[in-house]
Image (tube, rainbow, N blue to C red; front, side, top):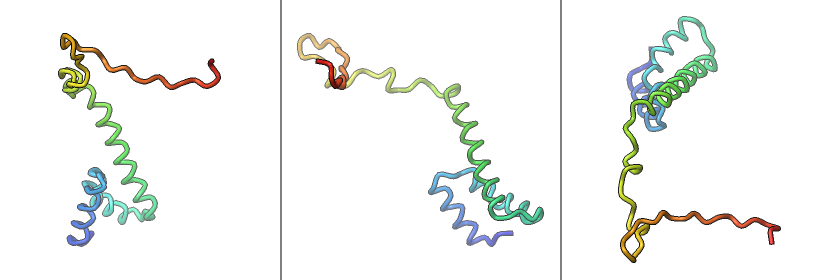
Length: 102
């Protein structure tokens, strides 16, 4: 079992690094790894694998549950309005110049 002070410090560092799944499961998996005689590399691999799978799961779920982007439905910013008639005109992206065409 991990000591509480080092564990608390580890959890804070993992959250600062934006690794919440590893922070959540570090102690539980450490106990399991100790019982099973895992090497440190196998323990670390298992934790990172959990993090990757959880991120993948959240990324797949996000588009289904997230509302449409607010930016997509908002009014255009002031720099896209023409001064004559205040009609909206989309910004044009500058096209990169092609070499050798000319």
